[in-house]
Length: 251
Image 1 (cartoon, helix red, strand yellow):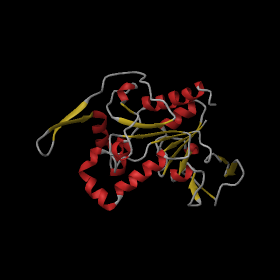
Image 2: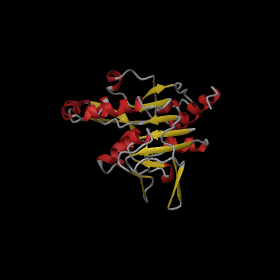
Image 3: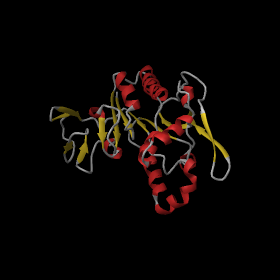
Image 4: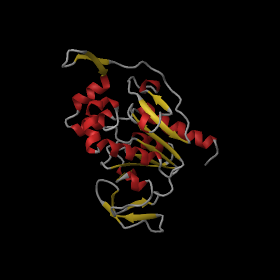
């Protein structure tokens, strides 16, 4: 299967799909951190998912740029000993992790400013563009946020602790022609860090999230770390969604 994993610089899901033999590619405006730049499009996913490129320039890995006006009739390109396959217009599935910065209710205190300057609407438009992509099977992931009302309620809300990772992170899934994920290994919810807020209110946060905040050196790093895809969920997405399709004899 040709599978596009959108907004995924970590390549967590992409690597599990590749282990299963699928032609999976990650795509992000950032360089990939998963160790496989040959499987990564550094580009606007809205262009990649449609198979054409406005910019005439797409970075295939960290070392070089592949430049062209439009895809030709060829099925692959050979550039500096790298074979670049033409796969963009015929994706069998897309799994997307759009940015939640302007959509998640955890940042509700900033909503007024983001509505006023248009950032929230940009986030909504991007989310909906992924949902409405011309691809037969689609999954879009996001935390608890405004898309439950701006679009519709998610098909499923899952937690890492349902898939073997001792952590809590409510993860919403909007699905098109894909089944709900079945928990694979239910464990405890992990540790929490308790603290007193500046207003004197006792609060707590998941320990994995607290450690991510300590590890991050920049706002960009903090955003990347807090949006991580846990291994158990990544494995479930790769195995369950592709296995289900094979059982239906769609491929």
